[in-house]
Picture: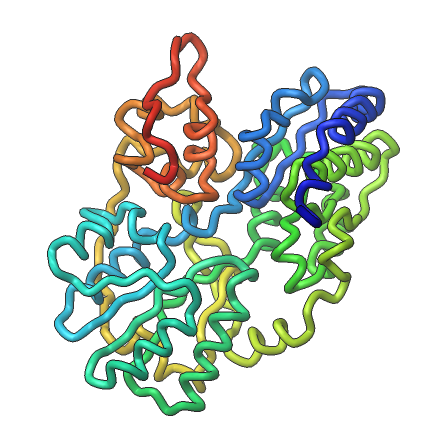
Length: 377
């Protein structure tokens, strides 16, 4: 298959691994920020084939996982109201809130629907003028352009029954917060290629200059990741700290100008709470005042909720790379993809889901816990 099999060639993978083993002289610690990259690393076993001591730290790059618990509780409070059609992507329906999830709420009669694009939600609003259609808009910079276009289109159509519950988060502030932490052991980053396809990589240049850490914009296939790891390792070995672009087939320094313009037209930067991590200044997006009529949080007045995480979930440690899923005492037993205690076990980009799907078990555990409960169960 064009542009797919080429990036999964086992012979080229072996060559890159051999070169990496020849290059690395120290046990470097690299973080991949993107959950999609985490799944490839774990599914292909790349993280277990690295030179002795070298470690991939799995970062907070799962947009579903970092969506604040309060936002999910707000979504469920809105969905429970008569006359509301709440829409979102499939992963969001099974993410646990304080008391339940959207899928269970739908089973009890709420009109909760899976859509493939935010424009599907706009069309629903056109088709059901007597209903309030709400789109739960989550994600990093990757999904922001499509959500911005949906708001702009709804505005042009004059739809008064369409709104978005916004929970966008931004990657560079999260990287900065990690590096500012005294406990941070990250020595280089693999930046998410799809985020950079939209935003470019200029936002990473000040981070590199301030913290002297290499950043390599990287794709998602096995050869992308192996080359990205090798590029970052070469920088570390040579004492360099630069932004390099492994994902040249999709990313340019300035990103996508039209997409960035749409995001800037509709959204503005704001402080944002990250689930499991906490409040990060200027790490999210919110609707600009001129689009306040499309803000579901204002329209439905769902403040005053009291979110409560499951006491056993250690998502914060997982998302910051301080813990591995196998460090969690509930992993694979009380927490599985079918019965998740926290978001990292639900999402297609969650680290816990990646480990579980790959059959990873805690040290000293024999057999694969929860076989048959794959991520799509």
